[in-house]
Length: 358
Image (cartoon, rainbow, N blue to C red; front, side, top):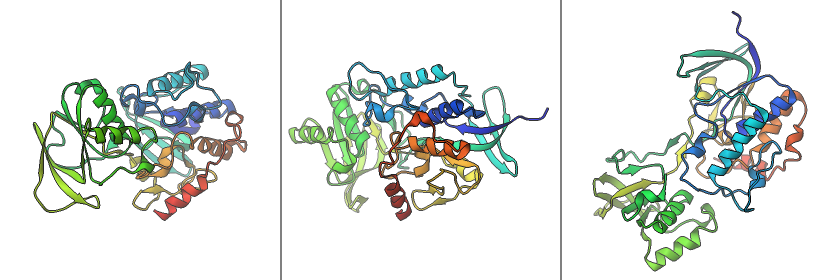
């Protein structure tokens, strides 16, 4: 049988991938949609009851408001319920738990090979949009003991650490928020950070004063200018640092029951590499046209945080990715999707200038 050729394939069913699907469906564009897990998968491993920094009007997709009864920032669980409702409302056909393992281009378009549990499948599409995000794997420290049972890169629930000693490694939002929540849940918390102090530009403005107050009061311990060298059952060996890097000298032995490595995450760029997308600089930023979101590979588009490469400092979020959808739909149909309205640029051009500098 001859394989049907779809106009577009979307890889990734996070908020921006779903928004693109809604806009294509409204425009009458025939498309396929895949995700290696469930929709909004990244948010499923967030710690429970984590609130967004962005407000609801900036998180809403395809012109569909997010209802809530408290008029405050919503949690990851509330946002997942919203995404499920959008998928139900538009009856979006999404191939969940069907990872795309191969993406190749020829003169007629793209071949996609997927690996669902039922066995390998092949599809054809003239164009492809990658909306795969940038948080697939934790940034590993590659130190002895990193894979011990009491060590984790993922913060699940503060209840896990009730009345236990917890060492948190890191100094940005995830580490600070975890420290405060775990302390309030009854954990004995210590933070190890490679810098002498926290950078207020990189931490939510309502978190840092709270953490500073707890450190000053002695309720949360702080080990500045330290990094872990090795993790053992019951303790961690720490080295002193200067300018964020380890220096020679005696190590610090810190006793602890659990270790949480809040060292950030990185994206899986293997599909970009397979397809031939050029990646530039230390942040491995994909080359693309900011007017259309089309990469150097004709017919291959980027939507969402994947466009930022490996974000060392986050500059692309959900809230400033909506215009990616509009640009892709306009490139396909010639029309800006009405559902997006007048999406402001929000200094998007300046973000690209920063990428160029990196």
